[in-house]
Each structure stands twice: as C-alpha cells, then as structure tokens.
Image 1 (cartoon, rainbow, N blue to C red):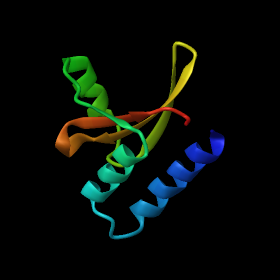
Image 2 (image 1 turned 45 degrees about the vertical axis):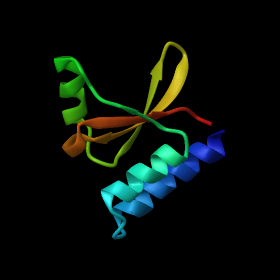
Image 3 (image 1 turned 120 degrees about the vertical axis):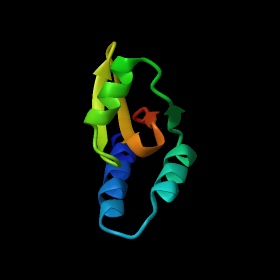
Length: 83
C-alpha cells in the first residue's frame, strides 16, 4: 500500500516538472482509483482554494488515510486511499 502511495506522490512531483497537462493528470488519478468530488458547501470550497493545484496532501479522518489532490480551476478534488 505504501508503495502505491509513494509512486503516486513521485508521479505528482514528476508531473510538476514536465509538460503533462492538468487533464492528463486528472485522467491518471481517476484511472488509479481516485474519486472525483465537487465541493458543495462554502466551507468545502474554501478548503479547496487553500490547496495548491496538483499537490497531493495526505489526511487522516476517522482513523483512515486519504490522499487528496485539488484542482481549483475545475472546482474538483480527487480523493483516494492508500491502495
């Protein structure tokens, strides 16, 4: 599980230095099992704005680990687990 998370973070870091488009990154995230979530409440939308586009963040909620990748221009967040 950690290998998959490490590979994802390396992929995201590598994408920041190449010419991979935002749409390509979104397609890769969805293909690897990330779910697309559109923030609905003002609080969720504010948190989305605080995250940098394409940066992966690890969060803990209810004892579970999630990885979140924000795409504020498209108003979506990609959420995946360690697998």
